[in-house]
Length: 246
Ligand SMILES: NC(=O)c1ccc[n+]([C@@H]2O[C@H](COP(=O)([O-])OP(=O)(O)OC[C@H]3O[C@@H](n4cnc5c(N)ncnc54)[C@H](O)[C@@H]3O)[C@@H](O)[C@H]2O)c1
Image (cartoon, rainbow, N blue to C red; front, side):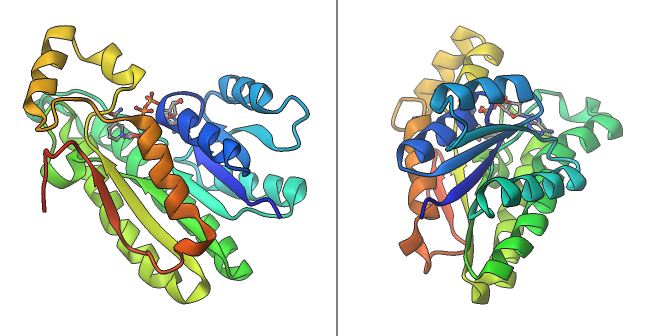
């Protein structure tokens, strides 16, 4: 039996790398994203027949979109086994200048998205007696962040807490819920938004003196999603180059 994984925000960046990794490991993958065209193009490249990869239009802030994705995957592959709550949006904004509206928008993608996704798929997994939810948190959610905005950091802090709450709720149903908290990763969004000089300074400030590997984060997701990972739940796996040790 091939397990089925839905990865949110999989049209680029870390989500795409996670989707590719899970597919290479034998999962059937659904790539959910606001950008359905880009998600579909990656799915086509992974498997033009559509038997093991599909792109889905999915706005994670919308609970009914998760319900629709759940039904679509039920019809297509008989159900879902793994949800990776990866979609996120960071915004560099000065603390005192963040408007309430901007705060709500950033929190909706990063926190409400994880909440409603975990509700919809947590219930589906509990009914089936098996499931894995892997949340992508962030070092910013643990330390308060530096470059990223307060809304982003606060939302990611919330993702860490939701991980424990859903883990406790679903533990007896064969469903695990865990979080991975990367520091700055070697990803397009980092190179696009951080000027080269500032990026050098960031690199030097990281104890291991390098940006994190998104491919390694994808391997962590794979480990947490494994069938034999059933005793790991409510955990938060740091991958921050030594910026936060605890
Ligand atoms: N890049 C880093 O250094 C870093 C560090 C720590 C954590 N993270 C986390 O990793 C995850 C992926 O980040 P990335 O760097 O690949 O970002 P990215 O901006 O490159 O990609 C994010 C993807 O999410 C999609 N997305 C945005 N809003 C969405 C929504 N409402 N519904 C569905 N999809 C939506 C975008 O279309 C895009 O494809 C995020 O949760 C981010 O917070 C990233």
